[in-house]
Image 1 (cartoon, rainbow, N blue to C red):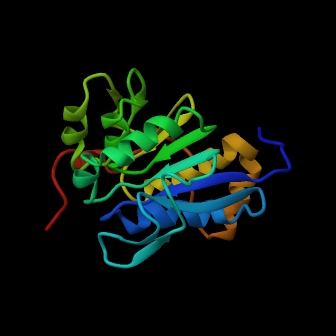
Image 2: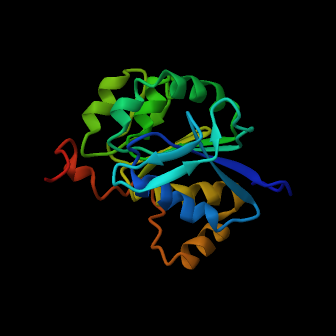
Length: 211
């Protein structure tokens, strides 16, 4: 468990079209751990970044001036398709994920990690409604179709959207102990699914988002 008095720097990575809850669900969880964790926002350029739902989030740092990151959070969303071709984003992740203590992706954020080669020979999961798209990105990833989240070494990947909150609490348990995670779940009035294999949405595998 982490015991350093210095705060862990968590970099929330932004790109156009990210999913709001993919980002803000985990940030609500981690934001309850001040001063142990300090959250910063990072994107290709400093300034507002639009979510798929519309509201914007301000990126405080660009990729060039981003400080060292202890923790990395990469959301998914419909903007993932374009992000897969963003060479600046892929290069940044290739550089920063190996040097971070722990990295996390939510939903289709794992597609970006896979495209960057950062999930090679690792177990990982993703959004269930479009799971086949994840498996088509790389045959070097051991994709897990039934999982709320997957931990493989220093990389955590979660299923879709709200699963990022369950994963985030699991990360807190890993870093600070289970009691701390339970305290955060209580404060946020969130019912934590503590079982990574309990995936209530695997039944919708590859069915696409209901219209």
